[in-house]
Length: 372
Image (cartoon, rainbow, N blue to C red; front, side, top):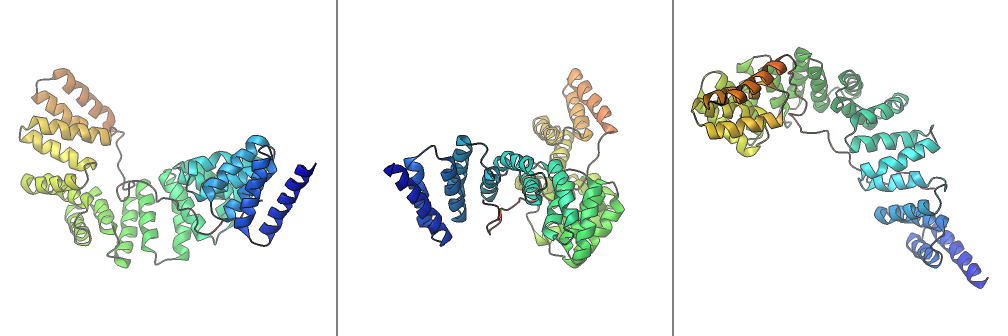
């Protein structure tokens, strides 16, 4: 009886300390409570709240998980656990408790937003856009939310959704070069490349020193076979960033297309040194090595090009030619057949060239409300 009374008193003290803003002492008090009674689910939940307020999110998450293990029906703990994981940038770990919290409260805009952002952070873009779209519609002035939705749509390849969101963003900030770039990426994904060029031209005029703006414009010119204009943009990109592997690679490709193998080889080898995962650099290097009868290096480059983009036909075609030169009739027939099958399906776009993935979602520096 005395022990129970002391425990109750300690719980009351912990609550009083928290109400007074003495969070460190409150955390110590709750730790004493759960040490005496390790089956007290509500006490673990209260400890998690205080630890979250102290921004000790890993410890808070552990306390919330213990509370849920003891009593899965404790209200609000799934949301608090999801928040604690979200604030640590553990987006995959945040998904399950936030889904449970949304089931508990399907009308909660906060939970829907957090779950959508967690899906974005976990690179599950289609799920992110499904959850964030209705919330963004109800919050037309929330530019940050519309930006995340736009990126979710873009990287989920729902280009019409992305374009709609970028159009809203450019209305809010018409001088944003970054929004014009993203709009251009969406338009290019929809095969509206001429309109994409207009967006990139606007971005390059607004911010000529912005990273990748000239590369993006150059790529679109290259795609529409405006090689002289493309070369100028790639050179401008190199003036901004002499190590730009993408600009070097596409300059090399232009030289190769113009039957200038020596400068092409120079650009392409520099590109490959800076970034060995650029498909067009490996493809063209493979073709040059094949022309030089350097079959060992040709094979290595072409196999790498295939691994980087197995759906693109050109590397399969060049690999088929290589196998023909080596007398491997079966290998040549296999690769040439693949090239023929893929020829009608192949489609390339700017998405993924300016950046390899969507921008990371940074957990908020300030605390997000939600702890019960």
